[in-house]
Length: 186
Image 1 (tube, rainbow, N blue to C red):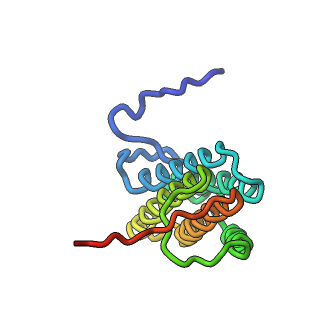
Image 2: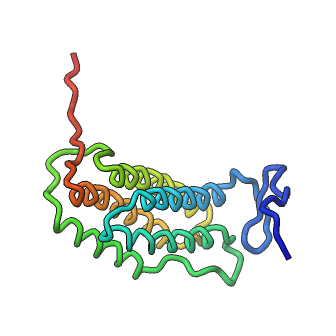
């Protein structure tokens, strides 16, 4: 049996959630898991730039976790059998990685701009997408409090990790972070 990639079931602007329920494609739940998918693609782009092994291993794990998170978010709260979502241990894993990387970085002395090495720039871009996913998840939790609190915590910690990993990528490549320079207003 073969499956076609196009089903035409969404041609009128709706989509199916896990469990069969149909909602509009601009529903906050769809916006949220769609942004998590976009974040996953941004991490894939960063990984395609061949980041150092100190970074790449965890990025691969995070891509799998984001896929699981997307599945959790695509499941309506009234479904009893839900996919496994992110767990507190996943958050701890990121915190430990942040601490290890920060231990090798010089302290921040100014705000930094996205840029430097291409891997760092890609991680900064992923961080921006992650922050948007986090904001959408907060909105989803407001509308559907059954949404796991760990999803917001996970995305918040992930954005922190991506910031630190962007700096770490620059550090490992011997490229300085791009310091923000205040312009003088006249």
